[in-house]
Image 1 (spheres, rainbow, N blue to C red):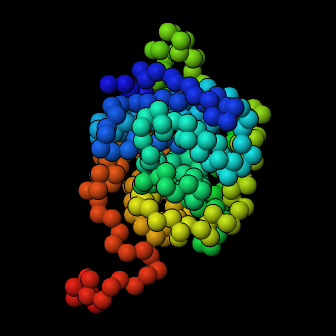
Image 2: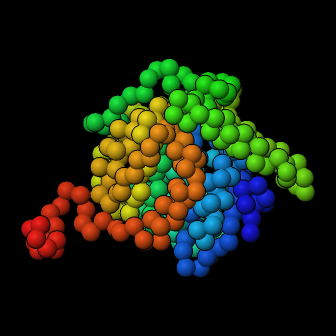
Image 3: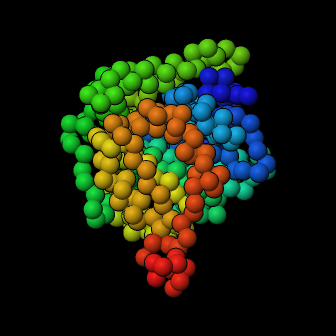
Length: 314
């Protein structure tokens, strides 16, 4: 079975852009694959293997994907989350026939969660279930802003100790952040540059990072996706650490409240990197959610249940 460390890099062309992606784990005819959308500076090479490989052990095939203009994909970096989602839709429209599938589940982390929300608004028939980690909605009531110092760290041209601290505050996680960074940047070292595999594409810097910042900030100033969240009739799992410095935990809670069929799970003594800090348990939780072990919401938020449907409650 392929892993984050060994999966072959594949390519397809959609609307004139060549995209890089990987299929990790074994395919299943009974369950849709899980599409993984990573954070603002990431590539398919910087997914944490602890998370990815634990997810494949739930029996599900994963699709990892480089956004246009990033990592091993060609094309231009999108100027907004809306365009990121349109590019992703073009990619999926070409990919789906090759896999004989009609839907995916989507795990969106941080900026990947923004793209997952927008994709679901634009093309709801392509998405079955949503996992939204360390992410929040666009502009709307109830949100809080991260500290300016944290935002500056996230977009620092050279990722390093401050970036790690933003994902894994050391006062609660100790050395786990450094271990995550090492795993994430080195997982492909055994195959990089060999047998047609590309060299490792590390965390994004330079002019590309400036363009990413534009897309990120455009989302933060757009009230429309927030206003449409209650139209997303999908089972959703929203997660965060109890002290996320990048996307404040409060914002993930607001996101879960606005989605009609969402569960919210908060992880202790953790922050933005909670899904990597608790990789084994997180993968188990995601697997149970996608497999229906965690119950679906029985009615949409904002609508009264049918009288008598909850026994003595009514």
